[in-house]
Image (tube, rainbow, N blue to C red; front, side, top):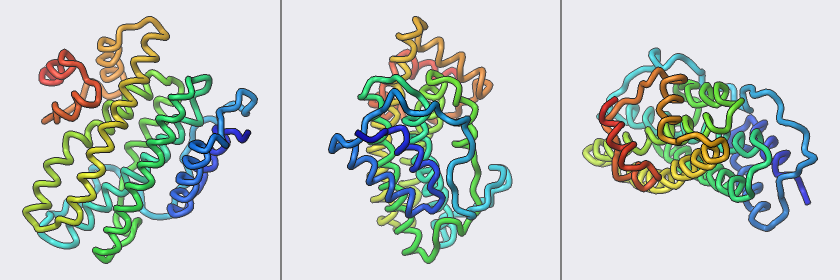
Length: 265
């Protein structure tokens, strides 16, 4: 039986996007066939550092990123590139959740490996769309915000489950419908069709975050909603901006009291 943690590490270390995608698909397939299991004898996880990345895109501060309108082909390509970058990072976020946090129920590892497989497929769809628009991943600058949060939460599975899926990835649930509307007005139905798939599947990823965040809270005997608010304040100074996609967040496991609380932020 091969070690799932070691396989996740190989996915993290791959720097070529095509190879990271290939390894992600192969690892998920091997897990589904029963060829991979978390191994108690696996070496302890290494301290978190940047995963394998291509030389481009150049990573800069979010404030430095150029703002392009969707009225031009270049602007639409820049948007597709930004989403592709998020999905590429999300592959690593899912595999790091598998690699870093040990002694979990098997369903935890299945959930996050499945998420990595989805994110690799999303990235593949978006990179294909970029090619149709005359560009490739790396042609535009990007930022490192998602992985920055992975580094900040590497010491705590509770914080990781709260802040990566339930805050950063949940933000995608909020903003994607508006992006789709704007792209429809530009006649870009091909990109809209890809975003429809991503939005539908990201609900399940945020729901996995909710499920395992609650699991961590139950394990530690702490109240989930108060803990979520405290972590948001500790790590992000309480900053969470609307508008919020209440229906999608409800599907992803946010309680009615949490949804009401979001309106107070």
